[in-house]
Amino acid sequence: MSTNENTPQVLPVGTTLDRYIMHRQYAFAFATGELSQLLRDIALAGKIVHREVNRAGLIDLGGEAGQQNVQGENQQKLDVIADVRFRRALTNGGEVCALISEEEEGIIFTGNNKGKYVIAIDPLDGSSNIDVNVSIGTIFSIYRRVTPVDTEPTIEDFMQGGQEQVAAGYILFGSSTMLVYTTGHSVNGFTYDSSLGEFILSHPNIKSPKNGSIYSYNDGNLDDFSEPIKKYLSACRERQYSARYIGSLVADFHRNLLKGGIYLYPSTPKNPDGKLRLLYECYPLAFIAGITGCLAVNDTEAILNIKPTSMHQRTPFYIGAPEMVEELMGHF
Ligand code: FDP
Image 1 (cartoon, rainbow, N blue to C red):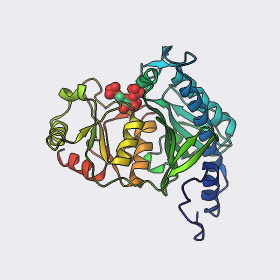
Image 2: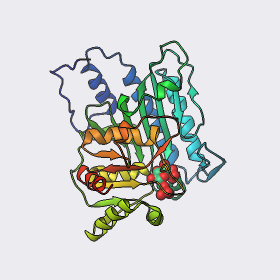
Image 3: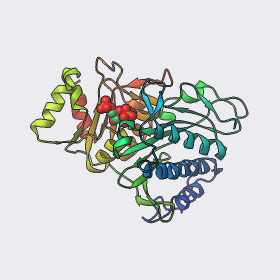
Image 4: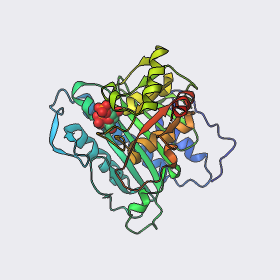
């Protein structure tokens, strides 16, 4: 694909998401509009989930749904609703032939075998925060399928590795709702204006500070961390860095991205491979991180270099301002 040099890369704050997507599409001579449509479908589902999240306290959508997801965690009603909303929007949109979701054991086939894309998604991350009106989010990762169009997609389509993502993003349902995504060139944030029903460009071309003074981890697990991690965290404390941990990956990552910080979820005896899922939590955030100048690693390698072996695989996860992550790695 070749970019049209006359097309400016950064549109002004206030541009609607639709206009932005269209503008980006025109910047690529051979773009077919399919990825653009897919991004619009995600935004539509995001608006619907925004509505559900915002009225959850009013219409008894809080609490558990009475069943468990594939991770053995109690599903919240909103988890299930978000899963259905995204699945429906992506199925109706027609560009996605299959999904994997945190909420489902196997591949979800949309029946659109002509669709060129597959998506790995965590429809509502940070579920323990749903009931208490604290920020939660959606995380997604998009691949171009490797199986031939017009055939049934397979697990191979999802096992391409993080470097092969064509787009990734998250929607943060916080004090405002924001969609942050990239198609690999720049990372842009759009704030939802519910009075207009539009996502509006509010954070163009996001770049992370090189260093920071925020560290985010679950302190209740500290005794179970390895010595290198404990040493790094004690250095953070000695410098009187600010400890900030929401317990919603999207929200913790977003804050650290804008302000400069590091998020850590190491392995513990309870979660020997870490807790976070590679395909629909770590890969997409690592993809975004790389473009903003952040680093994302586990104990041995860059997250995007990890070879996927299963759909719901987990990994230890350290992500944030590059100098902070480099210092952490220096302890390994
Ligand atoms: P949750 O289990 O509430 O869905 O995705 C897992 C995740 O949330 C992350 O969003 C969050 O950062 C982390 O787990 C919180 O885990 P702890 O409660 O163990 O700290």
